[in-house]
Image 1 (cartoon, one colour):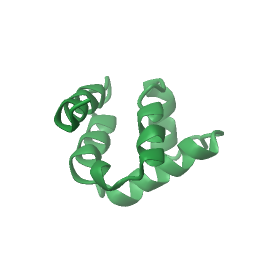
Image 2 (tube, helix red, strand yellow):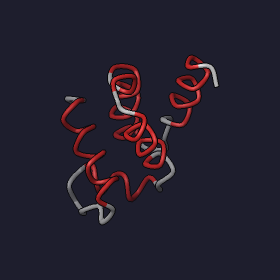
Image 3 (spheres, rainbow, N blue to C red):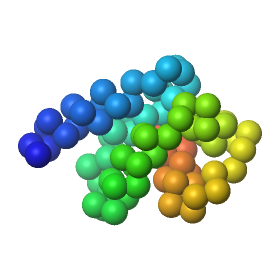
Image 4 (cartoon, rainbow, N blue to C red):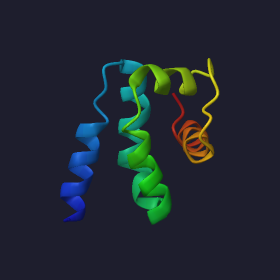
Length: 83
């Protein structure tokens, strides 16, 4: 897939039902996604398949993510995107 098309698809997938998630995901894709390893990109794409209530709980620190890969990605996003 063309890198521009892939990024457009990711930006579309970052449009969530919660503004709090939108303001985390969109800047991350625009500013940091290209710097990720292919494995980290795979994990990020998997993170986007999670339900919004779970994502919100993980990013707001209300609940710990039990999946180590996803938990690491949540931490990476929080460290890269300062809200």
